[in-house]
Image (cartoon, rainbow, N blue to C red; front, top):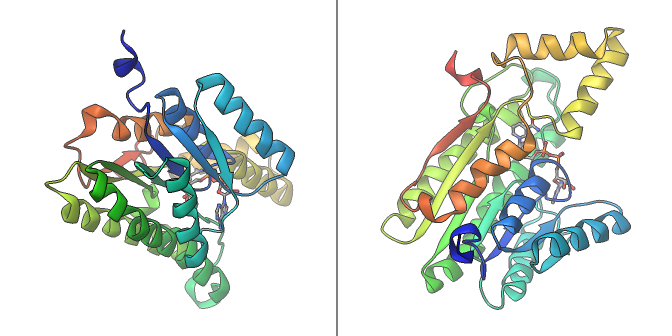
Length: 269
Ligand code: NAD
């Protein structure tokens, strides 16, 4: 197999927001494996992030940089895109809008307006500003891949999570609009909609529910699956990352405005 086939993203630069953990980190690994230079973004202990950087660059022979830009702040987002362009020696080819805030637990009357504002800022305005800032460079270089990490809750609703459901639905709309505005170019924009993924954040949430309710962790997880995810099991972060990587690869050139579910059958009900 030639390098071009096995590592089709050599020479490309990818920015993955929220990539110091969870789905974002697995996506950074998948894109690095395909040869892309990587811009990590997100929070964490400096030593841990330094280890992530060196691990990625040594394992996949790519250049890796990290920024702790807060994607809920428009000014930070435009600086982050600047950092990525510099890292990519003038080009940012791949933008994965992954950072998101899921927390919420009450009906709309008592839904905390601060959480609403934070979800709007991070889950929706962050991707808007990142795309707005990244697209001119992609157009100038004649190639680009944008993937927005939405959620199955961008397609169906559940009660008590109005900020998350509303912003993820809107992210789906943003995706389709950008896909139409870039149709006819070599830039694509798609969204993926995962169900329950086995990230530490989700597992911590289930551990907390178990300790608060006195139920076993197995019972909490079984309940979550029974009411939502027909497959009965968590989705692996690496599998979500593989779908994102496919959308960034050469065979996805005409995948435009796709809203790709990976939800164990949740949205098929
Ligand atoms: P996570 O909580 O495991 O990781 C979040 C990452 O984002 C971390 O690197 C964190 O430091 C970073 N981050 C948090 N706030 C940030 C900010 N303001 N600016 C920049 N970075 C920030 O998240 P995850 O579970 O992997 O979820 C990633 C995305 O996938 C989110 O958009 C989420 O809504 C979506 N999603 C997750 C699941 C799931 O079950 N985990 C399901 C559907 C959709």
